[in-house]
Structure formats: structure tokens, C-alpha cells
Image (cartoon, rainbow, N blue to C red; front, top):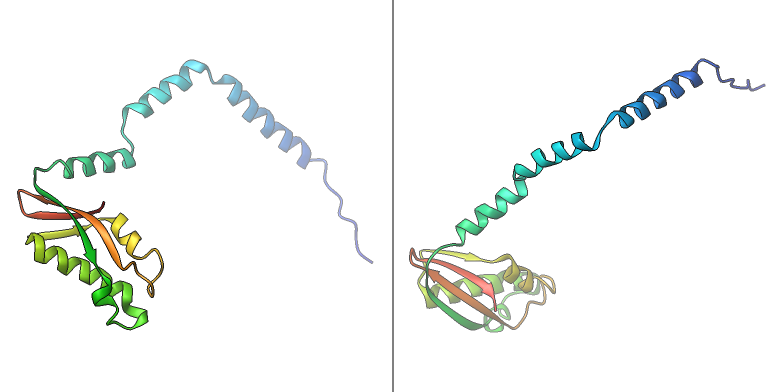
Length: 145
């Protein structure tokens, strides 16, 4: 036979007393305390805000030259096997920009990368329109146009 589980009467008053304590703590908070804590929290920039401001400072460079290109990708990636086509398209884009802009360093934006990989590894776009900027230091960035 299975025994019936009985609840002890001691458990219920403890739970009720904990609920009373938390409700008393909530009642003891005043609006002034909450607004003061919020104001101190708002004064300090969060980690995300700090990263955004650092990224904005990074992009405040002098642009020496800006061009818009339509890069033909199909010419090269069609020579690659299906499972390597988008990888080859990325390499083709980088060599095209290197040939035309002569950079010291080349950065391809995430938008361009996502556009290339949009249809998977086997089916990249045949051509892509990009905006290429070159800074005074020779840094070249590729954006989607």
C-alpha cells in the first residue's frame, strides 16, 4: 500500500512569513530612492554604448577617395566546384578591390559578406555593387552600395 504524504503545518507559516517580508521591503522603497538609483545608472555608459562610441571614433577618418564598382564575380566562381563558390566569390571581390585601390589594409563590411553568403555556399550572386572608400592612411573599406 502507498502511504499518503501529509504536509506539515510548520511549512505554511514560514512561506507566509517570507511573503510578508518581501512585501514589507517593497513597501519600504520610496520613489525618491528608485529615481536616485536610476539617475546614477544613467550617468554611466553601458558596455554597448562604449563599443558604439569607439566604433564611431574609428570611422572618423579622412576619406581620400570613394568609388562605386560593380564587381563581376561569376567569371571566377564558376570555375570553382559548387561547394566552394561563395568562398571563391569573396576571394574574387578582395582581389578586384586590391587591383583597383592598391590598399595597405582591406576591410570588407559585414553587409557585403552577408549579401555574398545570402543564398548559401553554392549560389553566390553573379555581380555585386559596392562602394569602396580609401582613407589617407591607405585603409580601404568595402560597403554595400
